[in-house]
Image (cartoon, rainbow, N blue to C red):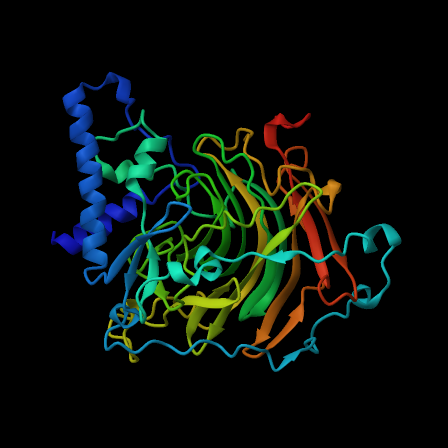
Length: 444
């Protein structure tokens, strides 16, 4: 097996954390001799260095952010054979107009009860550290790639040193919108679509417990096995700054499989093409933490199919895209298309906006906070929310989500409240979600 294939296989294995998998077999460090401890630690660090050098051999500069993230700056054209990047989508839609085939929703233009009107307050827009401080950006003409911080991970998990580095991220499960054994609060829409837009209320809770994961996201989905693109906020100890909110993207082409040009988070595997110089998957959202009865912050997120490429936008910028061709080749695709015709190559047929909590011991109750940690019925200033959700029903046409209901896995652990509608342009639709998990009475 050549080096490239070996590393791709290794990464495919260590990114697995799938529903129904057994617990990690990582040994406890207390049972290791000092010599074996150091040997394993060095092996882990070397593995990630080799992987990084293989994936990004032409790093122009490396910097560190105030939140502690290490950023590699690369030439964007180096990611694409021939050096020609795709063109981002048009910034604005031709029309925000309802499809003729769609059911009319009378609630979009009705007056709300006074108690709900009082909740329609402005929030503030979440940004990245580079949008806040342009002087922290890399050399002109480069784009950022967030490095997996293995040293921070080892510091966070001092008692776990696997003999084989492929196990180091075995507790980082991918988001799984069709999976059992996870906790959800979700609003779904079915039918042919080309993307979705919305805002995610950002909270920094006390952090996921143990190996648990807290996610708030959108997913565009189609096909069996599932193909999907997912984007939003994630909190997990594997993402620096540890257990703090970061912007993420995830793609899948073949259900639960993972690896280069198959599936994976951010730029940990080949597949993502970075375009923005200041917004990238994996970037910290630490400066934008909503407070109980205080300032609220939301991150705008958009996923859109444009000229064959699936683009992801966050914090007001097109961060990058998943290309039409596997390997980011020009058409005709020498290696075939990244997504299939039966999957999301040409469209999606399901949209999800949801909060998710997962632990490898699921379906046992979890302790990690979803959203703010408050139940949904506490509403504005206490519970987290999604708002202003649109679906793209044609390449340049969108409309407000206006049908369906919110569902939860177990409302005694994590609940939802909504959806609500109004004529306010900033609150056309929204729903609250969240909860504390098994600390709540009745969550077992």
